[in-house]
Image (cartoon, rainbow, N blue to C red; front, side, top):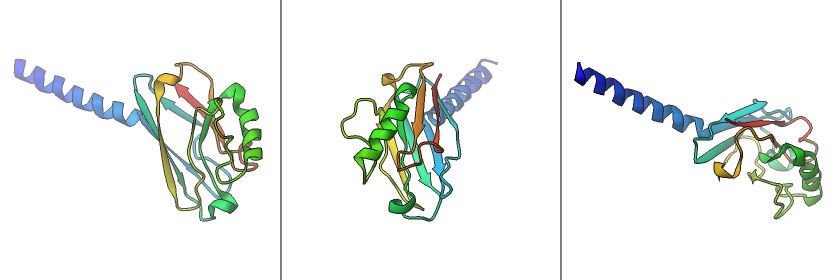
Length: 148
């Protein structure tokens, strides 16, 4: 009986760790139709670091239909998107702008990029928006990052 308990407890810990690590790695796809495949990403506040992987599942080059993943507080989203347009290529993100919490480089069709960041800088229940800052994309390619 005692042995069965420990086997079940160890199995639960292993499964719990596997689920925990999966929660700390998020993925999102962008396509040639100016769309992300997810309007919401969720992450547990128990994660120390989060990795977001962006895959461009389209075929067009970065200078024509590039995508990136930019995270800001929702209150800053529109202003940062506008500042990104003014910043221009290659990544359409204003340099050294404290409102930009996390960003990836712009990628083209068939490419993938990842960014790892410290989750302690975000607040559980905070209001965060992610978007693509390539010219004109932010209006369609955006969503919510929810820290639970």
